[in-house]
Length: 361
Image (cartoon, rainbow, N blue to C red; front, top):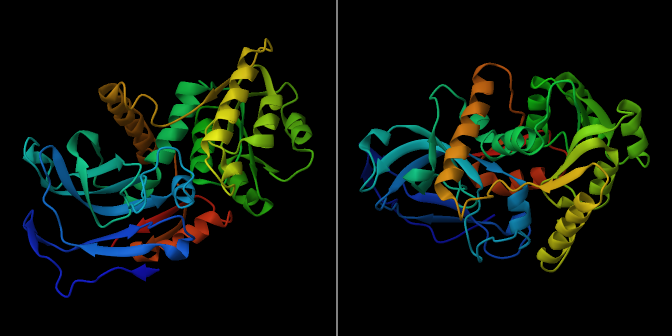
């Protein structure tokens, strides 16, 4: 990883009684391999009206950053930019129109970009206070992944006790959390993953299947001969077809990505629209089964207040499961922020079990 211009003397700004070191952030300068990421150092900034300055304790590596570095994430900012979909940290300073009681509060935030930094400026309306007792990495692993899993399971599919669900990528950051939540809800879980992850999935209570099994649909039906009640698919393509075919009557397919298109070229909007169109077609055909595409940001633009109220409500439920010992975030690895290259390479290797976390110094 290259470094941009260095400062001989870090800028020292008084923030909440402590010296504010310079901002250190990871930048994706253009479409690039992880080795092309940059480290940028710059002076600290004061929070503006309605903002808080947060010392970042943990931020995650997700599928979004893998897509963004390739220029294939819908709605991503123009290069160069700082990635980072979510974070956990402590409020150091607040701007005008923000309650001073937030200073010192532990918070989590869904950011989409900007999380790969040691100091982040955020809107005060978008942060979620969390208990000080939580491990920062575990709390971080539950922001986008935990909220996504909760909303898909309970808002999209409405899974009930006694039902059977299929989870593709059950070894991933979302998959491991989704599996635990489904089991906690009383469901039987079938999870696809590479064989090296099967023993760990069995410990969680998952019936694992090889995602490369040429007879995967038949293997699913052996476990669920009447079909599954819900299938969760982040891959698209053939995987989505198998998921839909595996549904029983009144079953629902929740699609939440097209990871199979990650390494393609050209605008991702075309395969995305084709995928959504196919989901719509499957839903309108009178076959007793339904499909939906889940997006954690749905409603963010037109119902901003309701969106953040729902986000806080659902994240608090996820955190309660963690506090009560009913959910254990699976942390694949923790890397210093300046080792973002290694963190991304691990996340993209498809060998990680759980979430890859960056820890700013």
